[in-house]
Length: 275
Length: 290
Image 1 (tube, rainbow over the protein chains, first blue to last red):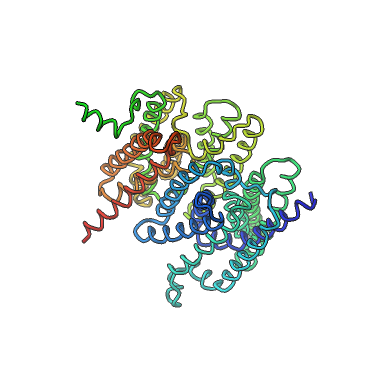
Image 2: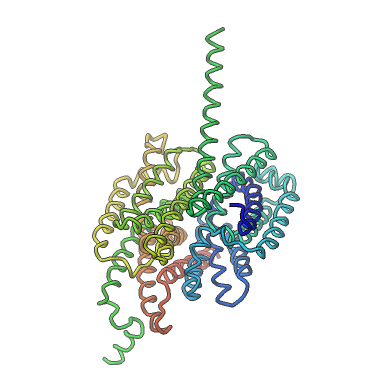
């Protein structure tokens, strides 16, 4: 499991889990779950489009991600947010279907791009992933307060002179960058599971932002590590384990919160009866 | 006569109307478009685009399981979509944001299952095309035996929506008002979610799980921009969906002649027609406003 060909997998997966945990905190806080799903899914045919043109797949992914962010921003002006996201998603995917079909050989790698093939990561994948991740986390750190402020209350942000729509665009841009970077390595659907599950569970555990972010990163790391280990032993796809563990983490957090509220209610009850 | 025939053949390739797979695709796809138009209008009004997309994605787990078990794909898609709808409703959260998160969690878990089933598909039957077929659809590969069951499912969805039409419209437009007037808002919401699974299942089988959102949301969003009254919007959405589906099938069939021996995917044409229609409706709206 810790053989030399697995070293790259562990390193890249760890980096991506940290980024997903951080970005995911804001995804959950801002209610951007659909965008967090649509951007990776709409971006993945970019690799096929790039191979049609004979350029590096990463460029195709970044162009598609950029188109996605611009499209959502443009359509959301005249449409509800969720409808705008859905329309952009289908436009990208529709075009992507054509690219996938024309490029022919990409049909084989659709499964990998969608669900992730983490066991085939080369050493050359590490520097770009590490560089982009560092940038994303740096930007998140720099914009931490305005992001938090506009997430909690757009009016309060506007009163402080922070443009909610600009921050929104910036956040979607960061989301898309993180996505395009992680996509060829772990797959479109795994990125999404890693962003939403741990962060949603963390937010149920604590309401303090920094603590929630730390819990979210820790959960994402735990999920990815155990998923890689199990995937290695069973030969089942890693996406399955990540999806299942993320859902269990959220379910456990809901259960824990419910139990805590119940015991709190009961202790109040006991005090009242006792008095 | 010969000129007329040549003109027809330029648009409709010879053998188009008599081809068995085309007839099946036109029937099942047309049914899916009509049901999606009807259900889609309510889905857009209620702001449940994400739920619609998630149900379709999760239904792909059923589709890939049916490949594996060799059962009827309709049963697979439908069973998984209904399960997911039940799970989303069980979590029953009132706040929209929390509901969206639960939708996302169910979606993530469901897609994990899809990954697992597709993995077994590839491992046991070496069907490498399963991922493409399930996610992007393979319209011309729908077996003729599926026509009747899918039309029955579609008819069921239309009938149920017709039965709860007025309360559904009221709860979609103003849930508070509906609650005051004694409409069981929660139950109506659950019924709509179940009907949504039926519609999405049909669309997922025809143009693929991740593109079914095109049939569900695209025509409805376009129609709601053009029509003011809900009834008219529903009719318009059905017509747009139907035109896009049949137009897409025709173009895909024709594309076999354009590029030698390699036809372009049907889903691409359908989505392109729908999206172009949406952009055009925006221009029409701008002119009206100006």
